[in-house]
Image (cartoon, rainbow, N blue to C red; front, side, top):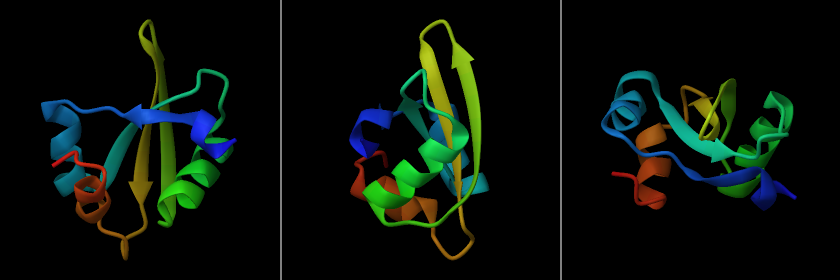
Length: 84
């Protein structure tokens, strides 16, 4: 079910800046997913440690700003996901 929660990476200039500045990656997620489910899905799918999840629901859907643990550089995951 993890792959149903995470729909993809949300990529804009602003979100790419968050990768280096705040160690955050932004995902487009299922509208019904909660923070706990998003955290578990990201940890399971990408084998990283998640420190915090912030969620923003807008007209276009739901975005999750996922802050990774300090020992997990977001830039490494971003490179794997072809974000940067």
